[in-house]
Length: 444
Image 1: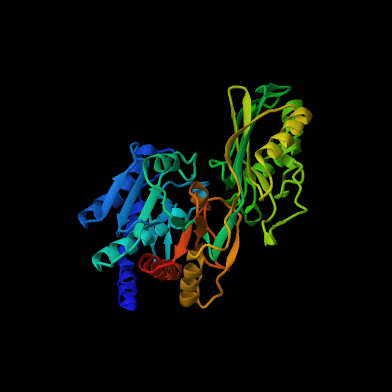
Image 2: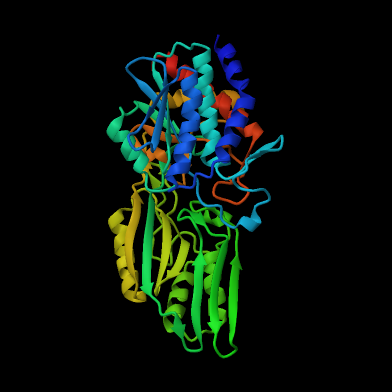
């Protein structure tokens, strides 16, 4: 019976692809309420027509789909909001025109997190069609601001019962029972547009606080030559939790500005500050201590700190530094470091987003079922590992991040030409369905 149910899920392949493409085609940038609600309505319309229970939060920033019965609940948290597209010129296909070429699904949100949403969505649909006798309720919890301020999770926590256990397919395999923290520090300095021999017209880089930028631009008027000078830096975008996988166009832009020898002392000082972070992925310039990398004999990683967004407007230059702090680093530690730096470099700062690191004990009984499903499908050893990024696992108790990226697979989250292979999609589909089936019908 189990294999028959799993086979039925695998046979939803074409529906998974279609739902993925349809979601990618909605340009649901984080912060775009209308587009994100459109994604939720798309899912709710299909689910409701098939008898699946659908509930919105009051603000329609969260959708909960539910099947099964029982006192206990297993939740799967996903999101339909996406980061900015980066440098459009580096996309080989339009980012919001989903494409399946027979091997890959491509488009913004393919890996993070629209295809995983479509996978879980179709598992619930298939279980519902097969009339699986779920002794625990299964919920798909779809958010709309994971890439932003997590107001959707505030709505969920205040309006719905918390699942007894949950996972989010928004990272990598195997089980992420440890996640680094998340922090955005916004730095600002007054910066005069006019300087000796010129005027600043534009200074910008990056469009998402959690993405290493792939382009930077500095435009100024050279009064002596009566011409406009355009300086463009080019890099390679990547998720800010994996900074060494990209090439930061923002720090490169600071270097290019310095090479022009402009007579603008404040701009030069701030460029020096930014240059201190060039290829210094793990925050040593800022003062982070990465000597200790373990907690309870588990690897907790190193703190990463990288500049991600730079904007100049109305006489103020604003820089965002994205920090992924290891377990043991506190908000007060971060505040202390930037207070010291602000005195040295003369800037103002504020912490505009913060999430504590996550640590979940390996003793949860559902982990055995998760690892068994993973090992059955892949033949690889399961287990536990560190998530360098952050996910909705932090939003609820007894929650971890699990998949969809496999060991050795390219992680294209937040990059131009984001994509996920059909092979990975179908492996994830089987892994998640095996776990959810066993977890929903057996006693642990």
